[in-house]
Image (tube, rainbow, N blue to C red):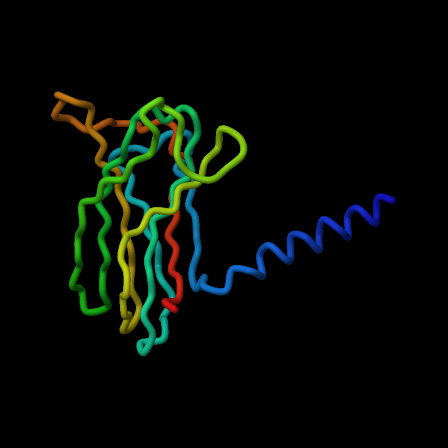
Length: 159
């Protein structure tokens, strides 16, 4: 009976992961239990087909320790020739009642946040992501952003 259950679990897992045909790159990096304002998360992207277009996403894994309604990020896309495109982004992370947005059954949620659409790559790129959350009325940023546990970056093929 145990072997039968194990085989069934393995089969379901394989089916779930094989259904993601758009995914080209999907990686997460841990920031611990709190994301330090001086910590920059960097992703080295693979060399992609320059004739195709891609959609880019920032992925965040957070838990109930995240106490803000939104999040501000600085995302830099560094091209092979050294040119860097820098964007300051804001995303809503919770409903007005305080419940976290995102996918997940427990207090751990995963948010897939649009970054750019229809991007064409020519060579090897890097992405740098930094949190720049500030509390209302305060100039210094939040030194340790509780509740964000992992930062990810995802590239999907444009259909």
